[in-house]
Image (cartoon, rainbow, N blue to C red; front, side, top):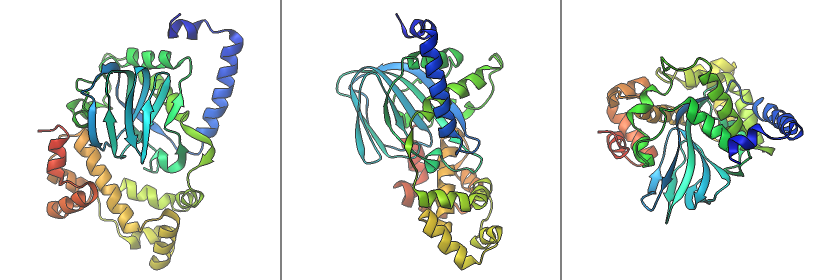
Length: 318
């Protein structure tokens, strides 16, 4: 019996039990993450071989794999993961990762951007697992994603190449012939899959959580004004605090100075624009609030180890 039949013919008792427990888990896990939206980039199924060897991959989107057969390895967040059949794997955005396959690996894959109303990452709000056993209905969920989104498969297996393929330019553009409910169902399936990786008994750092709560207005302001000049004085005024006290509190709770946080977010936005638009580097620099292209290049190289022009070329864009 295939996965679809298994899902459709499950006993009423099993299905009701799964729905009840999973809905309870989903509500608990997602209620602390404000207005989470996941934007689909790619989904599909493929088999790779020894050519699947890539180092130093850093992408502005997340990856989720469901392994069907074979074996391979992924390194990220200072840990090695053996990709095994029957398991799900999550790779966060902006993490330095490495991929290695000796023989063959068959997988379903899902790539997505994640947004919250504050502009923070979901990985700031909660602690995540990165490897989980799949559930019986997961093959059905992936097959449903592929059916709803048939034009989202990859033409190139190189993670560095598809970081910047032109199909990213229209990831959020509505398809004229797409059923109106397809986007909503796609969003629901992705939320089901991603929410399962959130650790039920462990949250993100309590101190950082306090910081996100205390400075929620400030963080939201930063993320919605990255194209403009932002000063620490402006941010302190939003909190009705003295500049020095505000800066100390911000660093104590979030572990980074306000000005460094702003720069980091500008550079992350720049990397995202390189992946999802064909804008010139000068235009990107201006859109992230660093109009001086030379200063932008120095900051980018300091953060990513490459000047932005080289980064873009090595990522597959001519």
